[in-house]
Image 1 (cartoon, rainbow, N blue to C red):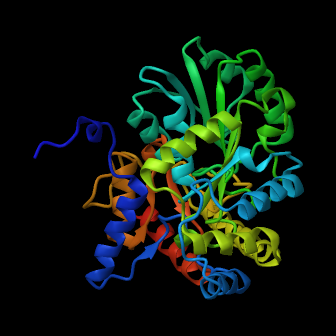
Image 2 (image 1 turned 180 degrees about the vertical axis):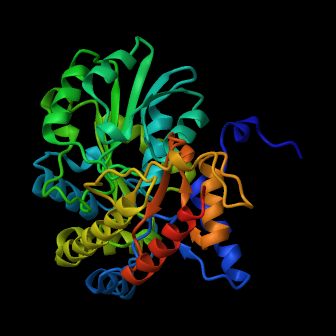
Length: 396
């Protein structure tokens, strides 16, 4: 059977590929430390699990509205007001099976074949794949470690053309951990005001894992309110990766378009997950704050160790749970057996030599870097940094 041509536009995400290779090596008996996936190692807080059990006992096991339970959408609206001072009605909110589906819904609802979509790099791997599936044209704008991997207003202005339909970014950022300040977002907003044809997807899934003290959303600017689509979800801030619930807040017509698409793909997300998410959003946030405090401790340790390694250049991530070091100094070097020709070679070298699973930076739009997740225990991170330092030291 001949497969559809659209599959040729995308490839398996490198994050999933490296995790898979790590599991295969572990199955062979190797002691592999997985620093590839962005998954908190914490258990879902007990009060959220209790709410799921209660939901099943009370019979919340049937189909729900495609857009999600009204009570959950109200809880999301209340959260947006409480945490972000943003006013959304429940008909401006839709719940999906993970934030990835929220992104897919939004992109497929907006982008026509040939439409230009600006994505600053480094970026999360799925953004470009979804644009390619929608037959849009991806326009990358490269950002580098010297500017904390952030897009300036000047570079944004230069990138926008009459064909630009959409802009996609994340803050806190996966893979760099960079967080846009209010001043930086204000400068970007001034550019967008001059280009009213450009819609904006703001991926805020790492909102709670923020070490700056306050999350800032580009949706706060009234002039952009009807063009911004906020994507968020439960996976990162509440350690609910397997529960699969994301949500989107934005203009009513976009929400209705996403409902139409989602009604054909998956209908609604799990009823039990939705009831648990109500408890998460309206309940005690102490477990979330405690988790973030642990991630901060891990970040400080990992960045401190990377700073000690000769040849590694690293910025200080202000959010999320990733380090994105520049490792270009190792390109062209060898341990006597393996020659490092590019970032993927370095990731494979670390996997097979040091038994550490990372992700090469080219997957995120920067071939001079690798992504290291510190969403694992301090014990594993301490061992991983020792192995990494020793592996780098062998490259001459």
